[in-house]
Length: 341
Image 1: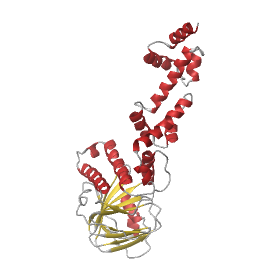
Image 2: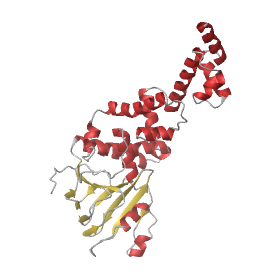
Image 3: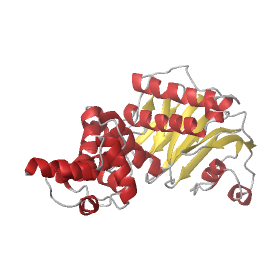
Image 4: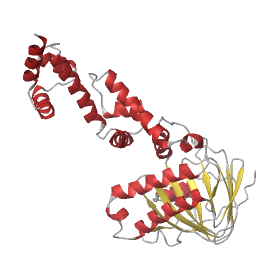
């Protein structure tokens, strides 16, 4: 299937990664295998099936937390045939044209059109015109899986089959390109927030991934397009239901996140948005309510009831109880006994 697409002059800045140390891949296979740079290793590890393989005349890259960015240019026309790579790869045009075949999709990477490859594709063929330059983006499979799981409210542990051609002239593609430009501009500025604060950079990286999953077609697109709020609520509600049913269980944040099918960070974000408190604080609140109810019903002594509902430290329990109800557990018990009598 050949993908046709309209031209567009908008591209990323060819100097985007200039502030970072350039990597020049050597002429010999041994030099390429010994490349220290992670993006150079990705280029070097491609198991070529032909001898018509050029050597990059320029390769500048930077390794971030969730992805690696690299600007690549070949000094002569190049033809490459390779086996599957171990990451998701996006080829974003800077200048010139590159013809790629990913599975059954043939894509021409040029201004206005990028290419996306998944890790399990059986073959890749590139025809690289002399002087053509791209920004290559490597994304680890687990990053794609984690972000998609958070978006759709269930765990994804399989390769996400994205469409090979990525139209940057469509609204979704334009939005994704804007996020990429923001990340690149912030990285290029020594005083930019992405350079100063790792957490800020990681947020931009995740935004680039989630924007890709919203803008580009793939086998989970229908789930992503569904209304987001109910999905997030289902993930939170799954945890709420479990806590309400078994508050005495020694839950950990990781166990609750696994139950919800999202990361711990995503679960905490969902609880803040839907409930107003983190999941572990919600768990403590439910436990406290059960103790309070049983004390009023005269269902046992203070130490017995606090242990029954998961409080293992009597001093911390007593302090938290008084802060919440304005009286000690013993006072609640006595008040409940007076009512019952």
